[in-house]
Image (cartoon, rainbow, N blue to C red; front, side, top):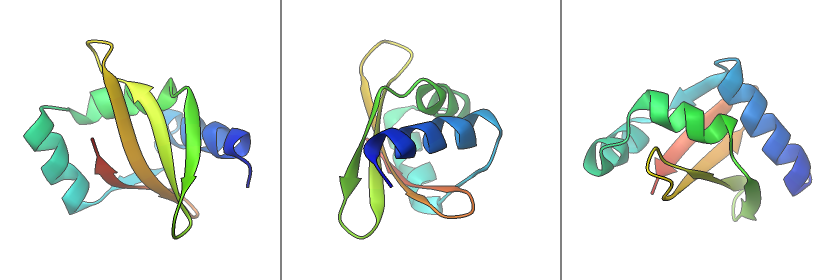
Length: 85
Protein backbone atom coordinates (compact mmCIF):
# COMPACT_ATOMS: atom_id res chain seq x y z
CA UNK A 1 0.00 0.00 0.00
CA UNK A 2 1.33 3.44 -0.89
CA UNK A 3 1.10 6.43 1.46
CA UNK A 4 -1.60 7.95 -0.77
CA UNK A 5 -3.62 4.72 -0.65
CA UNK A 6 -3.20 4.53 3.13
CA UNK A 7 -4.36 8.14 3.48
CA UNK A 8 -7.48 7.44 1.40
CA UNK A 9 -8.18 4.34 3.51
CA UNK A 10 -7.72 6.27 6.78
CA UNK A 11 -10.06 9.04 5.63
CA UNK A 12 -12.67 6.55 4.41
CA UNK A 13 -12.58 4.39 7.55
CA UNK A 14 -12.95 7.48 9.74
CA UNK A 15 -15.72 8.95 7.60
CA UNK A 16 -17.78 5.72 7.56
CA UNK A 17 -17.15 4.58 11.14
CA UNK A 18 -15.00 1.60 10.20
CA UNK A 19 -12.55 1.97 13.06
CA UNK A 20 -11.79 0.62 16.52
CA UNK A 21 -9.91 2.52 19.22
CA UNK A 22 -7.69 0.49 21.55
CA UNK A 23 -7.74 0.99 25.31
CA UNK A 24 -4.21 2.39 25.06
CA UNK A 25 -5.33 5.00 22.51
CA UNK A 26 -8.29 5.98 24.73
CA UNK A 27 -5.83 6.46 27.63
CA UNK A 28 -3.59 8.71 25.50
CA UNK A 29 -6.64 10.64 24.25
CA UNK A 30 -7.75 11.25 27.86
CA UNK A 31 -4.25 12.44 28.81
CA UNK A 32 -4.22 14.91 25.92
CA UNK A 33 -7.85 16.04 26.15
CA UNK A 34 -8.76 14.66 22.71
CA UNK A 35 -12.34 13.52 22.20
CA UNK A 36 -13.38 10.74 19.84
CA UNK A 37 -15.20 13.32 17.71
CA UNK A 38 -11.99 15.37 17.44
CA UNK A 39 -9.96 12.26 16.57
CA UNK A 40 -12.40 11.27 13.82
CA UNK A 41 -12.45 14.82 12.43
CA UNK A 42 -8.63 14.86 12.32
CA UNK A 43 -8.54 11.48 10.55
CA UNK A 44 -11.24 12.47 8.05
CA UNK A 45 -9.16 15.55 7.20
CA UNK A 46 -5.71 13.98 7.57
CA UNK A 47 -3.13 15.48 5.21
CA UNK A 48 -0.58 12.68 5.13
CA UNK A 49 0.40 9.14 6.07
CA UNK A 50 3.83 7.64 6.69
CA UNK A 51 4.63 3.96 7.00
CA UNK A 52 5.82 2.83 10.43
CA UNK A 53 7.54 -0.43 11.42
CA UNK A 54 5.33 -3.49 11.78
CA UNK A 55 2.72 -2.71 9.10
CA UNK A 56 1.52 0.37 10.92
CA UNK A 57 0.87 3.88 9.63
CA UNK A 58 1.24 7.35 11.13
CA UNK A 59 -1.69 9.53 10.07
CA UNK A 60 -0.97 13.26 10.22
CA UNK A 61 -3.80 15.65 11.03
CA UNK A 62 -4.74 18.68 13.10
CA UNK A 63 -6.64 19.02 16.36
CA UNK A 64 -9.39 21.61 16.95
CA UNK A 65 -6.78 24.29 17.71
CA UNK A 66 -4.82 23.63 14.53
CA UNK A 67 -1.99 21.85 16.35
CA UNK A 68 -0.45 18.67 14.94
CA UNK A 69 -2.25 15.46 15.88
CA UNK A 70 -0.50 12.22 14.96
CA UNK A 71 -2.23 8.87 15.15
CA UNK A 72 -0.61 5.45 14.85
CA UNK A 73 -2.99 3.04 13.17
CA UNK A 74 -3.15 -0.41 11.64
CA UNK A 75 -5.31 -1.03 8.61
CA UNK A 76 -6.94 -4.44 8.48
CA UNK A 77 -10.62 -4.99 7.59
CA UNK A 78 -11.12 -1.83 9.65
CA UNK A 79 -8.82 0.86 10.97
CA UNK A 80 -7.37 0.20 14.43
CA UNK A 81 -6.29 3.30 16.34
CA UNK A 82 -3.27 2.22 18.38
CA UNK A 83 -2.08 5.48 19.94
CA UNK A 84 -2.50 9.22 19.64
CA UNK A 85 -0.04 12.06 20.22
